[in-house]
Amino acid sequence: MSGQVHRSDPRILNRRTLERDHRRLAGRLADGMVVLDVGCGSGAITAGIARRVGPSGYVVGVDRDASLLGLARQEHHDLPNVSFELEDAALLPFEDRFDVVTAARTLQWVDSPERVLMQMKKAAKVGGLIFVLDYNHQDSTWEPDPPAEFVRFYSALLQWRTANNWDNRIADHLPEMLRSTGLVDVRTCLDDEITVRGDAEFTTAAAIWPYVIDSVGPQLAASGFLAEEEQSRAAESYSEYLRTGLQRQTLSMRTVEGTKR
Image (cartoon, rainbow, N blue to C red):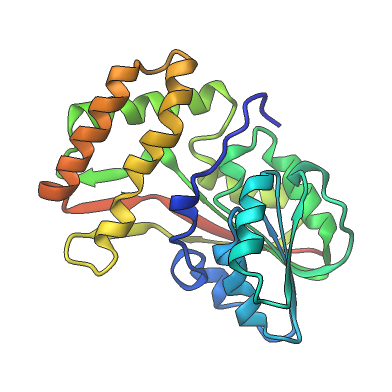
């Protein structure tokens, strides 16, 4: 794993739903399935999985961030068929247990994704499905062009990620990664998150960037990729751009599915 550990912002995680933010998986779930959610964060998607598999199914959400798991347990304590456990994705303690193993927006923060995929495969039953959803950060677009201050922040973000050995094009590399672990029937689907002004979710979806700047900006500054004043200008300029200029945001994503033989 990378020497630097990223902590996701719960303000971003909590807005996600299974149906909107992991829809390919949602379409393959059925009553009674046993599911492992790797990198579950604050549990928003995990809870959706638990509801979808019903009382005869069960879901385990694992994450390396104890504080996010605390939020997950607090928020979803009413669901009897889900548990949240503190685990390292590269050292999962499960074997031949789950009908479905998934990781959504998780491998982008790992410098050894192949190792995590091997652990996910190990956790699945024979015939079990592996679902991975992640970004191609290099292909994100905003229309019209965003302000220079935000472009500077985003460039620094990609440089910082590269310095930590986090793949900015991991979605492109997922199909071969799944095949290299021995998974079969590997299928891939472009799964871009497109937000257009006028959509019901426009403001919520496009407003993630001030949170990203707020949570990641100090790490960029501490690592020398962005000055503190540049962070402040990026947040201010993007907020104004969101209010008056942004018309369309496209976050490039891919969902890849494979089967354990």
